Image (cartoon, rainbow, N blue to C red; front, side, top):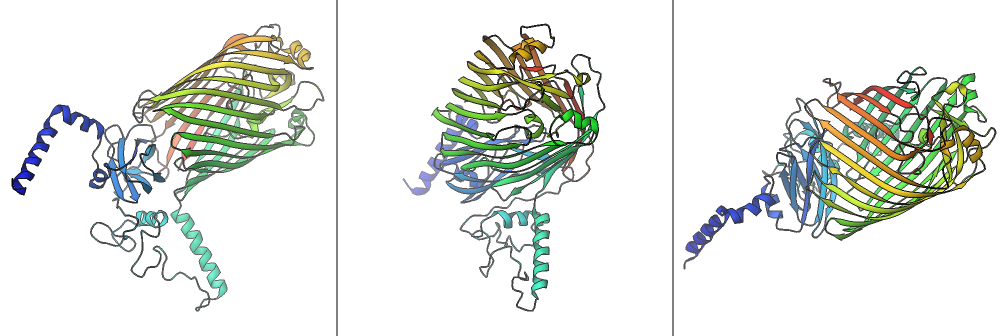
Length: 630
């Protein structure tokens, strides 16, 4: 048989196989979106990046080009649900997601290993009137040329911002000019002040060049919030007991190459008590082997009149707190992760120096998408920890607005030490973009000098002031079942049910607490049932986002002073964000925010199981205002 005839027969056989439903169906299921020629060639190799691209409202975006630039080049486009699959050979890559009409700050460095499977959730922002940008590919070891041989570093047709991005993020082995000098280094740069330039001229021009490059080439993002907050007593309906407080909040950040992001956050308010907080942090990208997170925070609360000084009830005219922390998630190898961290705090109003909070965790894959987990935590909780330390979420951080004092007159504040250990198992299922997780865990927790928080005592029952005391130390053992995930493209939810048994050892302050709030002093042994749930939903048609958190427990302290037994009750937080049809700056947005909550503590991850249960008459906090994002 001649060679041309053999080729014809092989082509015909391939056509028949592709047309057979039983053989073509798996192929159509495995490739969910069109890919470029480079991606098809790479599909036979060992690595893959897959995920989903959503807009800022959580809706999947189709037609987004996800590009990998590095050892080789490849590109995939998202399907109608925003999902993509990008096969890659092993090596280092820079990923970028682009689409005409959208702003995408996403730029990430990834390392693809043998049989690696990396999942990514990417967010891009709708931008009306954004000019089209062409995505060009380059390759390490090749030249800095496009598909028709134009030099990326010199072409006048190339979009300037895209060219600047290549010069900042691609290795210098990719972009070289004909003389071999590093790309992006202008010939007239005043690197040598001896050649006709004075030292002063060189210093001034060099500083100006560095400053201009920093502001022109840095992808800043952030928000400015103008908020109003008020506290409403739970015993007086929804009528406020005091005048609202104004809060100014600012957050700004930018990427550091392709490795991570830095952020600065700060807020301040004025009233009878003036307060402000500031935070600086750096967070490495999740794709890094060591995805670490470090930061420093400082907060202060000062009295500006005699009434504020009387409420503080502390030496001097205010209180301050500072914190330094670091956390790291170390991917030792695929399927084996270690989390560890340390937080060091300093409070000028609490006695002692034992304010060190270490934590450790491990996650090991024992089967496909099935993991064994374990963690250990030792955390310090002091009165006012929620006022001075940043929240675990990225939402607005309110400066200290509540005041507190010891229930025992003249007694110093005590710190609560929480130690927690847990082991469990969890399993993931579902498709990318709609992953769900179910898990079970056993936990043991001990809280030394457990704090009780009591509102509405003395000072005319002011809702912004509370008293603290220590009913004793408590130990819990229990089991927990958890389910979480994206149940639709618009709804993400979680539910955690636990049952535990507690054993108490009472302190010398227990009798005084029992005389004021009897239900805050518990039986020596008690059984608790707890259900904590969250829900986040987005409505892209109206640019609306809603989040709800709710906690039900069988052992909340009663508000009544004449009741000794705890009660089955709940606490909630509801938040609504509405994007307004106004765009103050290019790529920005204005959001209206309103939030209502009667949760005392939002830091449940580092606090005690009982912190919320022993918060008596916790007032509702109403927050509203405008957020300008850029």
